[in-house]
Image (tube, helix red, strand yellow):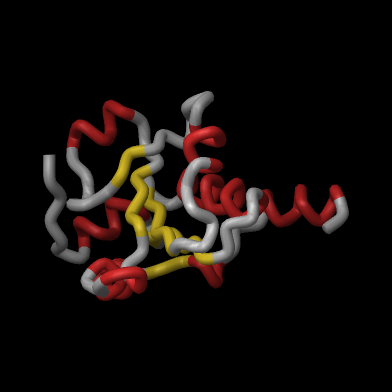
Length: 122
Protein backbone atom coordinates (compact mmCIF):
# COMPACT_ATOMS: atom_id res chain seq x y z
CA UNK A 1 0.00 0.00 0.00
CA UNK A 2 1.41 3.38 -0.99
CA UNK A 3 1.86 6.20 1.49
CA UNK A 4 -0.96 8.18 -0.15
CA UNK A 5 -3.30 5.16 -0.04
CA UNK A 6 -2.58 4.73 3.67
CA UNK A 7 -3.37 8.39 4.36
CA UNK A 8 -6.59 8.25 2.32
CA UNK A 9 -7.73 5.07 4.06
CA UNK A 10 -7.18 6.74 7.43
CA UNK A 11 -9.20 9.79 6.36
CA UNK A 12 -12.13 7.93 4.82
CA UNK A 13 -13.90 5.63 7.25
CA UNK A 14 -14.41 1.98 6.34
CA UNK A 15 -18.21 1.81 6.16
CA UNK A 16 -18.11 -1.96 5.55
CA UNK A 17 -16.84 -2.29 9.12
CA UNK A 18 -19.83 -0.45 10.62
CA UNK A 19 -22.16 -2.54 12.77
CA UNK A 20 -25.65 -1.39 13.81
CA UNK A 21 -26.60 -1.87 17.49
CA UNK A 22 -28.89 -4.83 16.74
CA UNK A 23 -26.07 -6.59 14.85
CA UNK A 24 -23.60 -5.77 17.65
CA UNK A 25 -26.00 -7.31 20.17
CA UNK A 26 -26.20 -10.46 18.00
CA UNK A 27 -22.40 -10.68 17.67
CA UNK A 28 -21.88 -10.25 21.40
CA UNK A 29 -24.29 -13.14 22.07
CA UNK A 30 -22.14 -15.57 20.07
CA UNK A 31 -20.12 -18.17 21.91
CA UNK A 32 -16.42 -19.03 21.93
CA UNK A 33 -14.09 -17.75 19.24
CA UNK A 34 -17.05 -16.49 17.19
CA UNK A 35 -17.70 -13.75 19.77
CA UNK A 36 -15.68 -10.56 19.18
CA UNK A 37 -13.69 -8.90 21.95
CA UNK A 38 -15.57 -5.70 22.77
CA UNK A 39 -13.28 -2.67 23.20
CA UNK A 40 -14.34 0.75 24.50
CA UNK A 41 -11.89 3.34 23.10
CA UNK A 42 -13.27 6.33 25.05
CA UNK A 43 -11.55 8.31 27.80
CA UNK A 44 -11.41 7.05 31.40
CA UNK A 45 -14.02 9.66 32.41
CA UNK A 46 -16.45 8.45 29.74
CA UNK A 47 -15.76 4.82 30.72
CA UNK A 48 -16.73 5.59 34.35
CA UNK A 49 -20.06 7.12 33.23
CA UNK A 50 -21.19 3.81 31.77
CA UNK A 51 -20.12 1.13 29.31
CA UNK A 52 -21.40 -1.85 27.41
CA UNK A 53 -21.12 -4.91 29.63
CA UNK A 54 -18.07 -7.06 28.92
CA UNK A 55 -16.05 -4.30 27.27
CA UNK A 56 -12.32 -3.89 27.72
CA UNK A 57 -11.15 -0.27 28.09
CA UNK A 58 -8.35 0.94 25.79
CA UNK A 59 -8.42 4.75 25.40
CA UNK A 60 -7.51 5.54 21.79
CA UNK A 61 -6.15 8.95 22.83
CA UNK A 62 -3.73 7.37 25.33
CA UNK A 63 -0.03 7.31 24.41
CA UNK A 64 -0.11 3.58 25.33
CA UNK A 65 -2.95 2.63 22.94
CA UNK A 66 -0.71 1.37 20.13
CA UNK A 67 1.42 -0.72 22.51
CA UNK A 68 -1.63 -2.27 24.17
CA UNK A 69 -3.29 -3.02 20.82
CA UNK A 70 -0.09 -4.63 19.49
CA UNK A 71 -0.24 -7.09 22.42
CA UNK A 72 -3.65 -8.43 21.30
CA UNK A 73 -3.91 -11.49 19.04
CA UNK A 74 -4.23 -10.35 15.44
CA UNK A 75 -6.31 -13.38 14.42
CA UNK A 76 -9.13 -12.61 16.91
CA UNK A 77 -12.32 -10.64 16.17
CA UNK A 78 -12.87 -7.19 17.66
CA UNK A 79 -15.81 -4.82 18.02
CA UNK A 80 -14.90 -1.24 18.94
CA UNK A 81 -17.05 1.62 20.16
CA UNK A 82 -16.74 5.18 21.41
CA UNK A 83 -19.30 7.90 22.07
CA UNK A 84 -20.54 8.46 18.52
CA UNK A 85 -18.30 6.50 16.11
CA UNK A 86 -15.45 8.87 15.24
CA UNK A 87 -12.78 7.61 17.61
CA UNK A 88 -13.72 3.97 17.06
CA UNK A 89 -13.27 4.55 13.30
CA UNK A 90 -9.83 5.99 14.03
CA UNK A 91 -8.95 3.02 16.28
CA UNK A 92 -10.21 0.60 13.61
CA UNK A 93 -7.96 2.25 11.03
CA UNK A 94 -4.96 1.97 13.37
CA UNK A 95 -5.68 -1.68 14.04
CA UNK A 96 -6.09 -2.48 10.33
CA UNK A 97 -2.73 -0.81 9.62
CA UNK A 98 -1.17 -3.03 12.33
CA UNK A 99 -2.41 -6.18 10.61
CA UNK A 100 -5.69 -6.90 12.40
CA UNK A 101 -8.09 -8.37 9.84
CA UNK A 102 -11.38 -8.78 11.70
CA UNK A 103 -12.24 -5.43 13.27
CA UNK A 104 -15.62 -3.72 13.24
CA UNK A 105 -17.05 -0.73 15.07
CA UNK A 106 -20.43 0.23 16.45
CA UNK A 107 -22.25 2.68 14.20
CA UNK A 108 -23.18 5.74 16.25
CA UNK A 109 -21.20 4.53 19.26
CA UNK A 110 -22.60 3.94 22.72
CA UNK A 111 -25.19 6.64 22.03
CA UNK A 112 -26.83 4.53 19.32
CA UNK A 113 -26.59 1.48 21.61
CA UNK A 114 -28.56 3.32 24.30
CA UNK A 115 -31.06 4.78 21.82
CA UNK A 116 -31.75 1.20 20.67
CA UNK A 117 -32.79 0.45 24.27
CA UNK A 118 -29.75 -1.62 25.26
CA UNK A 119 -28.33 -1.30 28.77
CA UNK A 120 -25.00 0.06 29.92
CA UNK A 121 -23.24 -0.84 33.16
CA UNK A 122 -21.16 1.20 35.57
